[in-house]
Image (cartoon, rainbow, N blue to C red; front, side, top):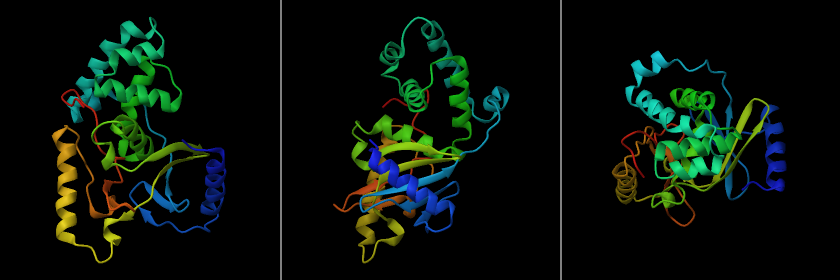
Length: 236
C-alpha cells in the first residue's frame, strides 16, 4: 500500500522527470522505470486515448477474448442490479477472467455494468498501451497464489496528470547481473516460466531485462504488463 510519504516522494520525482532532471534506469515500449528509493522503483506510463470497443474487431482478431466477453456479459447481467459488488465478487471468485474484471473495477473505483465491461475489454485489446493497469491487475490476481513468490511486490498504482505510476519491488535486471552463473540462472528462469505456463498463464514478453534478481537471490518476472492472465480455458 502506498503511504502518504511515498506518494509525496512520487510527486517530487515526477516533477523532476517532467523537467528532464531524472534519468530512467530502464525502459520498454510504453513505460520508463525510475529509482524511487533503495527498495522500490516506479514505472511511469503516459495514458493513451483509446477508441471505444469494436466488437467486430475483437471477434475477428481475438475470438477467445470475444467469447470470454460474451460469457462475462451473460454472467453479469442478472447480477448487475441485483447485488452489491462484494456479492458479485463472491459469485465470480473461482473464475480467473471474472476475478480480473472485478479487480479492475476496484482499482479504478468503477461499478459493474455492460459499459465498464466493454471498457475492460477495450483496455485488454490494447493492453500494450495500458501496461501499468494490466501489470497491477495481474499482480492482484496472483499475489496470493502459488505463483506469487515469482513476481515482485507491487505497493500500488497512482495517477498524476496524464501519467500512471506503478511502484514495484526493486531488483537487478538480468542483463545487468555481474559475474552471474548464466547456466544456473537460465535453468532457474526456465523453471519459473514453466510454473506460469503450467497454470495456463501466457508470458508474452519474456526477455532477460524483464527478469530480476532480488537482494535475497530470487528470480522474479518483473514485467507482466503484456501478459495474459485470463481466458475461458485458464483457471488458476
